[in-house]
Image (cartoon, rainbow, N blue to C red; front, side, top):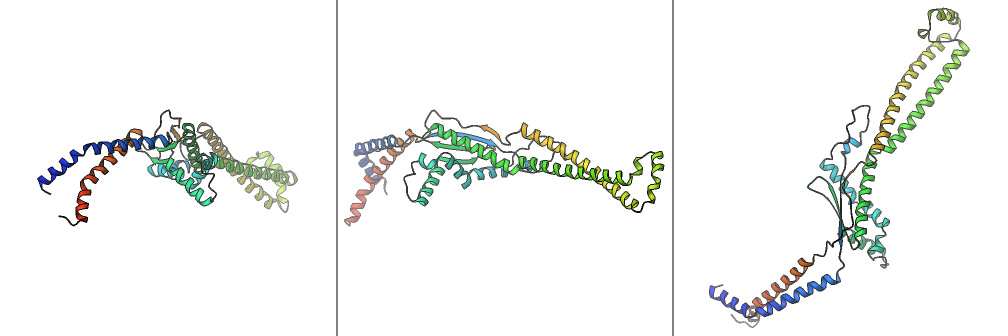
Length: 318
């Protein structure tokens, strides 16, 4: 394409500049119409930092000096983000807020199509990502500012429940209490059995008695079952000693775990909660009008440049 040809094309476009400007105005007007008939959506953002899952899965305060939960690693952030993007999180939010009705999809009779559209709508409005600040960020768009904030905060609660399900703190406390009750019952049964044997056969652990009392009990050695009963009492004492020490450790562990649950009712660190927005987030009015106008102008210019070439090609002209 020669320089002269380019000048001719430019001159042709300049002579049609009013056509291009008119098309640009038409495009801008169409963009304005699109904005008018498109409901505005508001954005609510929430964010959280989960704990280190390695820490919460290995809670045992008797083995380590507890210094709080460690900082989350990238895999911890991605694990929580994955949980928030799961089908279970989607269904939880959809049911809690009746999103079928909220998104005006409840009139669709086909259940599979309704579910597909509901999920597509939800995924277009709810965005989960791991931010550059090492947080899990929740972005929720909705026509209602309050609903956007409520959904964002509900997803924070869902994340907290997910982390708690990994830590299983309440389940651990309940299991610990059951173990203590079982050991206390065994300890009581052993004490009762020892009391019966000692009372009936005068069998004592001589290491725990004074020399005078021990001398008084020496005739008991003549009894046929004395040695067997004595060994039984001695082994029972060893078992009792073990149970008492173990129960004491478990009671301390239980106290620490309950204190931890009271001090840290939530394992996630919420860095931002969703709040109702005052200004619309989308559609972006200026960008949409500019985009429509630019598209109309570009399409018009391309048409003015190439339509003559296409006509000549169709007519067999050079």
